[in-house]
Image (tube, rainbow, N blue to C red):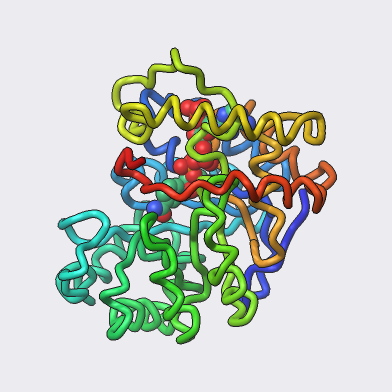
Length: 326
Ligand SMILES: NC(=O)c1ccc[n+]([C@@H]2O[C@H](COP(=O)([O-])OP(=O)(O)OC[C@H]3O[C@@H](n4cnc5c(N)ncnc54)[C@H](OP(=O)(O)O)[C@@H]3O)[C@@H](O)[C@H]2O)c1
């Protein structure tokens, strides 16, 4: 496993991290046993960065992580990042939302205490706000509250996760020194962060956590027109209507571009996300041991060539995320 610097914090984090959404739920049935074994395997292989959220199975993902870390009795330094969702309301937040109504200081404190309990720790490595709207940039008081938690020694670092449809909305927070890290979508389909977010991260020493590098599995090339997502798998909605076929057609075009230059499409997807120097870690979603092994092994391979990365730029696809958008 190769390690990278995490922004201004001086942490040395695995460049391929563990995305723990699916182990919490929302992706069809997921056995706790598979999740636990997969997480142990990833940590055995040198992964030391895990991303989770309170929303992943209503705390289930956080509890599984706590259990695994307890079983390992602190044999290695593992960084755990979690997220606080906004108080109930529209998702993503509406431009009319009042930040005090969605992320009040009292609400954030209750939520902080909840994650400390679920993760069975006295200090959270990285506490992120799960989503954002640019409507809050003029008065980002929620981040002032998180700063306070830092001063109290209850968190080491604070960050924000971008709203899918408006990732650039967090730029002002980076420039204003409000966040230690930003979690964003960067993959062969979504290359827009190259324009401003990645350069801003370098300029302001903000760590970049890349999520959804495989476009929820699509960029591994395994989806077919016959693919049916299980009951309870959010991808029924994400790939609804003709979005599945349109995605498959585009992935086939990517397959032709990659050719024999990478061992498989999953490796190509992860390596594309790892390519920018601004990226600290790519949190690949993992739900079993095989995926842990495959995804972490990518770090030992040669990086993607500059020529292939350039060729893949042609596959940038602007679309709406999460709304089964076109
Ligand atoms: N708003 C936010 O802040 C937000 C949103 C989304 C994600 N995240 C974070 O980012 C992490 C990564 O994103 P993600 O999990 O949504 O998507 P992803 O990494 O693009 O895709 C992960 C899924 O792809 C499949 N997969 C993984 N490795 C594979 C391999 N080697 N070969 C074939 N299939 C493979 C698995 O599902 P199947 O086996 O079922 O196909 C897995 O659940 C999440 O776990 C979460 O921590 C945050």
